[in-house]
Image (cartoon, rainbow, N blue to C red; front, side, top):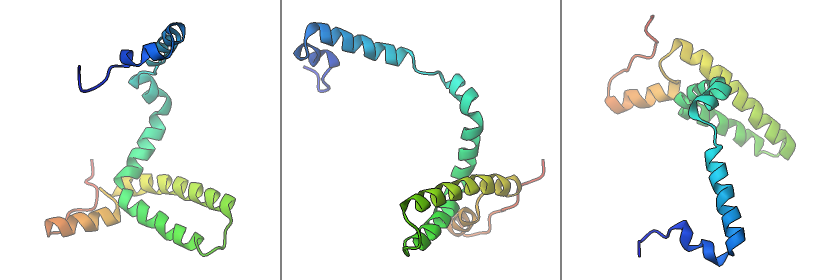
Length: 128
């Protein structure tokens, strides 16, 4: 017997008709998953925006944490906290795109990389 149990080992315990329907449903779900190209076509701009946000993840994390600390003072109730968090995230997406159009990386990413390699890494984006 293999170390990893196969799905067929569990199927008979459910019942034959029910098991066949369950397996057919799983096959349908797997076969109907969107392809990578269709997802990129629909969500391409969101993917690009979040990729930029990811390149500035450390800077954005510290910024978000700072605002969350302010929120913990009790000035806001839960719906306002959700709205504030989403608004800050949208602003960070916009800010990341603007910042990365001029610079190679986020400010805190630059500081961390410069300290790691022990010399100043270029921050400005090279003109194309």
